[in-house]
Image 1 (cartoon, each protein chain N blue to C red):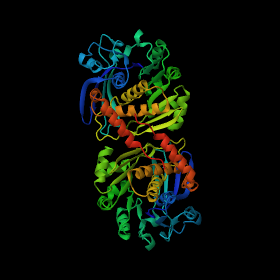
Image 2 (cartoon, chains in turn orange, yellow):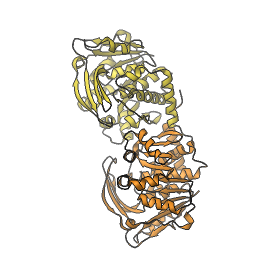
Image 3 (cartoon, chains in turn cyan, red):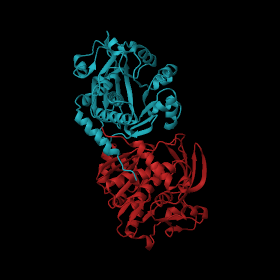
Length: 302
Length: 302
């Protein structure tokens, strides 16, 4: 089952208390694709500038990531620069140069239009809708968004959400989108907008999922050293969607395992800058940490 | 197996976005005792003033809570007044009148000195040590503390911790006590101070336990309406210790179930002011929510 992802491919310059990485590979679609491609073929739609190098492309090559949809435009690649606080719990954006991404109009290659799963990365909801117009009815439409679109393009976002099966956002976004502080109430409001499954990411505090099967809660994996949180949310989405692509159905147990798989990959992502840790990840390491998640959370009934 | 608890019995005046309760029963030993007595006999050591009424005593009577150690002194009972923010995630103390609690010197009745489990509530660590001097070697010594003692009486606290088996504190206290921001590193530092089991309470984000058996993580129970968080931490401790008192050993599975039992009782506590919800709780309601915790967190291996 193939996955179509539309989102940003970028250069990131990141400062953490542990060091600085200059113009390394980033962007939501990059993290998502490398994570999801561990489980299923990925069709990547995005845009890069003429400065996007062979070395960066090599991160995608040799994996089941199709690059026909990765447009190359005259100009510079999207560049984001940020600095994390000493505790890694907040970050300041120092600079955002949209560059070629500013005029990104996703064009879905003919080969991609029958992808069974579509992941709409965090882009303008108007573009998200245009993507859905270009594809045949997928088995699963999943979606991310952010505060900027919730406050600035709510009407368009609501149209997108009406066609979304799985929404993956963080707790602050869930509160903003629903107008409810309490997360259980927020989930009810958002699920009434369309997504039958809502996955709320809480960073180090884990994930809450609300679906037709009820609620599922997963803790964050307690890591002794978090090096760089950039891309953790997109990597989570890649692991979550990737697991579903490889599963026979989206039943309750597969959705739950998908949350744990997303959390597992995200816990590796933050151990190094950029996609460095994801690119060396083995299936055995993934399975071991998944099992460790089980040990971390398991308890016997009374 | 009987539990000795030493801590505060108080009047609380609490304002939340949902209402105000004036001079209702509170205090760490009150919440702890009512929760723990659901599982095992509790011996309560504390102090109240001459204004402490029969109605308040009725909360303890008819339960397996022994009141021989509840001293009555001339003067007024400890009174705390606080106000919660609209999101219930922070609170301001408006007033603290220590009253008779200011000169509290715990005296352990002869009948209590062979209690198998001792819970040292959040009082001056010098007094916590004096309690330990008065009892025979208990099977388990558990302990709570707070920022005020960590910054003001660290040397005495370290002496207490050297004799403690289980320390139950919140995440901010764990960071302050260890000097480590990362919670895994913080746990290692604190366990080296004495407690072989460390339970870190994170409010709505759940609980992390570090023991000789490794780490265990439990989410917070997603409640649609949280009415008053006062006493949730002490109620957690009561459920945790109560469950261990009723268990055959402190093996890994019993410690994990104890965390879930503490979380279960705490989730009821916050549904109403004071001890109101705890006082009407039935064994069936507890078992149902414990089971719901299992459904909330369970996933199958790959």
